[in-house]
Length: 252
Image (cartoon, rainbow, N blue to C red; front, side, top):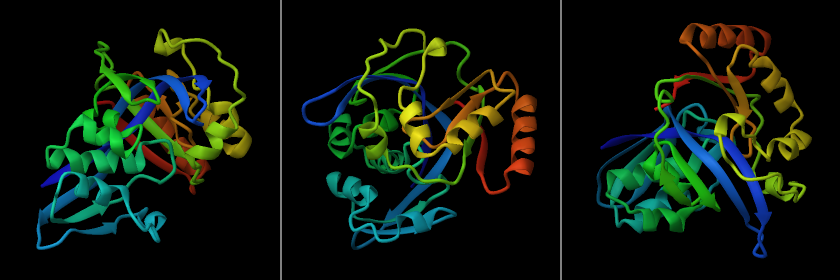
């Protein structure tokens, strides 16, 4: 069995409140790219996980990978491989998408997904959806013309864990999420304070129809009217910043 762990984007992300338990109440619109990590599994006598790919080293030393937790949650006994093609701690779903791919292979439910992390239910669906609460109260939505939109993902090769970004949020409720195109990402300001290069990335997406940071960063995305405009931006950015990570893809 083989599943793509589709890269998650937050087309808009409004932070409405910090709850007493330290979590945050958000309103977001999830979308997913056609590409991502790849999770595969084959029959085995015991559960195991092998990680490869360009970003495998980012998972070195993890005592209990979320993919293994997902496998145990559905009683899967298999030799699992994870081809880690997306940067870690990057605002793209990462481990949540990997766990969701494993759940899809073994028939895992939304209830199980919710026990693994706030983004896992949306990643299990891997379709455009509105998320509320911690992001785990999701409702699929249809947005005409969104599927197939050319996307350029850009990360300055700087990991940015979610926790410090949320903790740095200023606590100001700037209003609900309505039309996502005129929305915003309320985590951009605290993320830029921690990784100023995010601002440089957003400026570099100059030909994009919409350019925003995804999730808690540091990956930013540009949505384009056509693939030629996307590819021209990608070529220019790659020449200027050869150390940055780029992915040319489309929305599902």
